[in-house]
Amino acid sequence: MNLGFGEIALIVFVALLLFGPKKLPELGKAAGKTLREFKLATKGMMEDDEDDKTQKTQKQV
Image (cartoon, rainbow, N blue to C red; front, side, top):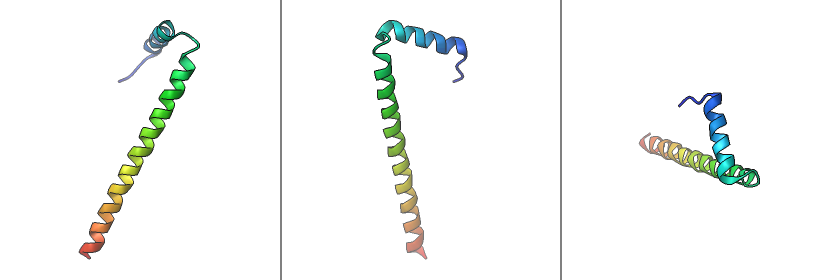
C-alpha cells in the first residue's frame, strides 16, 4: 500500500471536513496511544512465545 502526496492530502482534507480542525489533534493523540498499546501488547506476546520456546528446549536437554 503505497500512498503518494495526492492521496495523503485528500485524506487530510476529508478528515478536516468531517471532524474539524479542533478535533483532529485529539483523534491523532488517541490513534497514537492505541498504536503504542498495540505495539507493547504484540511485543509482550512475542517475548512470551520466545520464553516458552527456551523453556521447552531446556526441558529437552
